[in-house]
Image 1 (cartoon, rainbow, N blue to C red):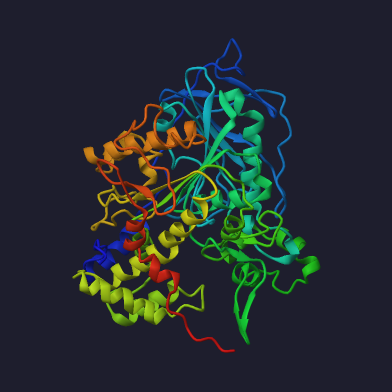
Image 2: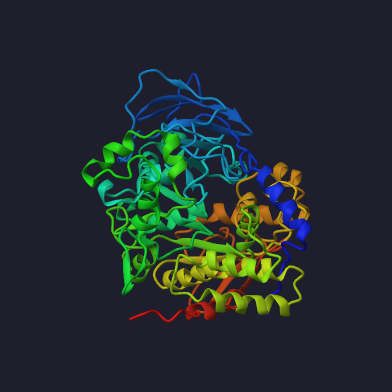
Amino acid sequence: MRKTTSIIPSRFILSTLSAVIMAATLSGCLSGGGGGSSNDGSSSENPLKVTTQQGDYMGIEQDGMRVFRGIRYGVAERFATPVFPPAHADAIQLNETFGSSCPQDASPFGEASLDEDCLFLNVYAPEAPGEYPVMVWIHGGAFIYGSGGASYDPVRLVEQGVVVVTLNYRLGALGFLPHEALGDANFGLQDQQLALEWVQANIDQFDGDPENVTIFGESAGGHSVMSQLASPGAADLFHKAIIQSGSYNGAQVPLEDTPLGPDLNIPGGQSLFGLPTIAETDCSDSPDAQLLECLRGLSVRELLDAQPGNILPVTNTATLPRSINQALASGEFNEVPVMMGSNLDEGALFTLLEVQQGADFTTLAGYRAAVAKLLQEDPRLDAGSIGQHYLDQSIAANSPSPFADAHSAIGTDWRFNCPNNTQWNLLEDQVDTWGYWFTDRDAPSILGPLPISLGAAHSFEIQYVLSSEQTLKERGAGEDQLALAEHMARYWTNFAKYGDDPAIGPNGTDGAAEAVEWPHLTSGGKILRLDAPTPAAVDQSAFGTAHQCAYWENPPQLTLPR
């Protein structure tokens, strides 16, 4: 039986959380760093000067790193494939300022922006000259929010001897609006690929090794990493991949609808995201031949107001000819070593966000409505039966907030962890694979002070890799959390250094360099449970049992008309 962590213990807490989450912000909560030193591309007069194919840049020194913030890697007309920017003649002096975030509304995951000139990246390098592995971070935010800027501080990774790159990519309707008239509209994924091309062309000037590039990301960033595994356009642009909570929607959606029967379809991307967005604009009556021109004439504000609350890359396109799961199952993907995992309480964050949006988890009717909303993207699922199954378990576990905990568990198991388990099984026989399970229910809140604990919620593991020790302490991390963060930073950087050697992987060259050796995943094998203070190797089956993956292999479904 699932051991629950109560995320909403009372009606009073429900209203309090709503106020707290509206005030909370992730922007800056992981805070950025910087640095500087000599390298092969440096001027002898200024060790912080580097020469790229687009021109010279002058970085800064900060926190024992060389830091180069706000480098423009691409330019793009709206709804068009990005290209490298033109070269500049004079050296550009960089500072602590990041380049503009891509257009988005203010949210707990990023600051508001209306600036389409946003294709910037940031490079963080060790002070000492060398030839370092490269780690390229792709941020999350439901493909609607976020940036590669101040929310992420790579100082502890750089201290372990790697070069870290963070980047922006186009979001929302401007990055992913699916419609046949726009062609291959996965512009955000194309931006990521252009940034990786920039890395291949220039990272040696920052002492990075272009032949040893690891891409890593969380949530939409992890989904992006999986998409790049599936994308032919990303071939040879990276050599290892780390996916954090990115296994959701592995089937993705094709551009077109998928018929299920008379008058019943699984909606494709155009129906789910494209047409509803366009319907909210003055382009709603434009014929397809004139749609692109009309959309380019809208203001950024008009597009942001029209776009849906989340979006996905779509398949049956040049960037994604097939879905992530189809690519993995067929073996037609970019075969590199993979480290991937998810969190014990992924769904808790989303249950909290539903509360903020007015969901009622104090009544059975409110709970049923929330479960129906959660599962609505797949009309085949019997939301009533599934909701009752999880509610019965929550009540049997004596949860003080059974409706909220059951909703959180469905979101955890169905959306994240069982898809993760499926992708482990697809990968382990084809590429070297290492799996993790983040289970630290005492993780500090990244949302600021909350009257309850969200446990090992979605995104709460990021801070263990991409924040400073000071930030963790400020959030209330104890010695156990600091110890786990140190282990995780070393596992992540060891994988970047040695992941192409299955005998080493995330472990150090002296064997079990961390608290425990992370086992290579094989069929029926072991994964690493990341708990504080000491990780432990556990059976993959323990993960599958805890998240009811056997149940989700054949979940209750509605009888569809024939």
